[in-house]
Image (cartoon, rainbow, N blue to C red):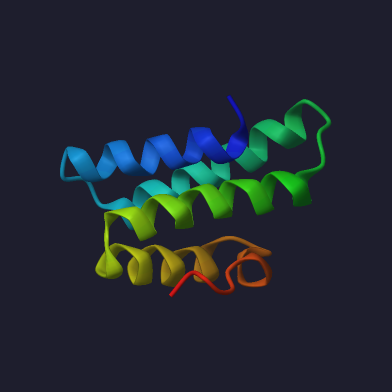
Length: 89
C-alpha cells in the first residue's frame, strides 16, 4: 500500500460509517506525514501523496465532501495548498 491509497481508503471508509471526513482526512494526513518522517522518508513527498489521497476520496464522495476536505486540509496541513489544485474543486 502507498501513502496515497492508505489515506484514500481511510477517508472513504470514514464516509461509509458517517464520520466527519474533514477531521478524518486531517488526522490520516498528519499521521502519514509523521510516519514518513519517523522512517526517514521525504516528508514533502508524503504530504503530497497523503493530501492527494484524501482529496481523491473526497471527490468520489461528493462536492460537499470535496470542499470540506479541501478547506480543512489547507488550514491544517502545511504544504497542502501547494498540492490542492485542479481537478480538485
